[in-house]
Length: 160
Image 1 (cartoon, rainbow, N blue to C red):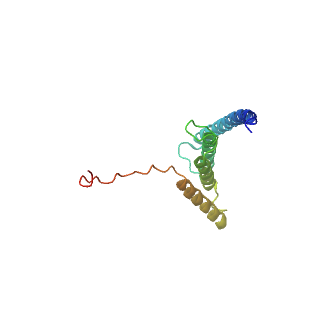
Image 2: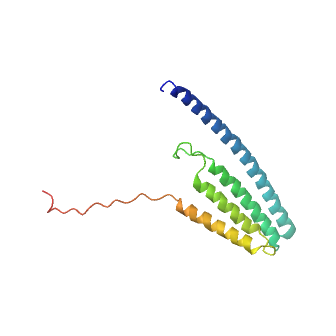
Image 3: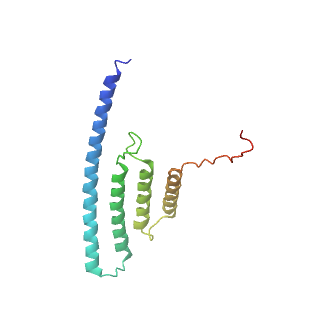
């Protein structure tokens, strides 16, 4: 059995290298997507300011711009979710809280761009239930503080 372990270590190292390569490619793609989205947001805000001045009154324009904001934020949060932190557990590329946060951001974005004139009550209920569920799970997986251990009261009469 001991003769097989070095081969497994080599395969494990190759997989680690492959995993790092995949993360590098994904990171580059996310940078491209986030950068392109940011350019679109800047152009849209510029057009809004030039077209309507500093007092935009069209809810559709505001919804569209905030939808674009959230698209950029989701891309940036997705990038943070694939970061490997030195203090993270080994091989834990995607952390649960980041994935839940991305889900919440995507659901909130859907709420923002939702046209209330054409909304279905069941769709609104489903979106509300999903954001509530994601929020509860996000709260449940939060880091727990270390328990405080209180020392027993010291009674000098019991010590000899």
